[in-house]
Image (cartoon, rainbow, N blue to C red; front, side):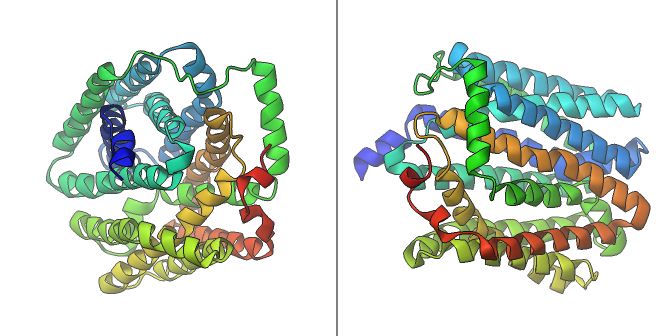
Length: 396
């Protein structure tokens, strides 16, 4: 046990975890709270422009994932992460001058550049013998960061928008400075491949995982649809102020974090990962549907708590399924491919959500997202159980 602790919680992993937390904290605050509220209330931008900006963020984030393994083979970890965070910092600085829609969209796009490297680097550091422990730790850090960001941001936005902005800017500078202490070496574990061969592997992976594609794209699209409208939906349709909206996010986030480990262990013990996947998607769809009925605050809290537990049941099973398709000798490339495919939904979701909100209202976006998650859940009822077997039988 002592050996495992030393190998996992060494200074390098601790530094990566701190940077990951700060990056995801700022990202959650910016995407879920600051951009929609600042763009609509302070800059007077429409929801569809805000949706396009969030999509631009995911576009650069996703495109970079395609090349991150290649870059990490040829440049040091410190160089790739540090340059990425510097470009993201420039994007954050530009937000205060984004009075024109195109500047707002460009700033969001630049901000997306620095997100991918630190996450992909963390994934390449996961060892096979301690995968469950290490992945659980990384996802806990990621979720606490991205979940606490909007909660803190919503509370502070009620007090001062400028203070909230400068706090997020300060955290972005801190993560950039911390990246200077990252080891100045390459990811030696990753196999260096020519671009042509990487695309060949990409096509081969997509062929094997064709039944996964609906879930990979549609689940991130459903979540992306909600991002541009969540703050205004909470305020205008649910009648919540910033603190009450933060309470909703806290209820969902806390139950997700608390449920991840026990539900993951229960999934392993029962061997029923498929049904955790099905129930997770279906329960998220049902929770969103009832949230769209605009219930009172106490029911909203119960619903967001149920959504958090549903996500906690879904996430371990989903990642176990994805891990079966990752090429063992090309972890960086494999996770980069999967992150890219999932990022497609994140790119188009905000545009769809913002457009639907402008056309049919915010509540319709919540209902469409609920239908989407319900359909994914029913689709995976027919997903073959053999896809959850040991990865050696799937990935060669």
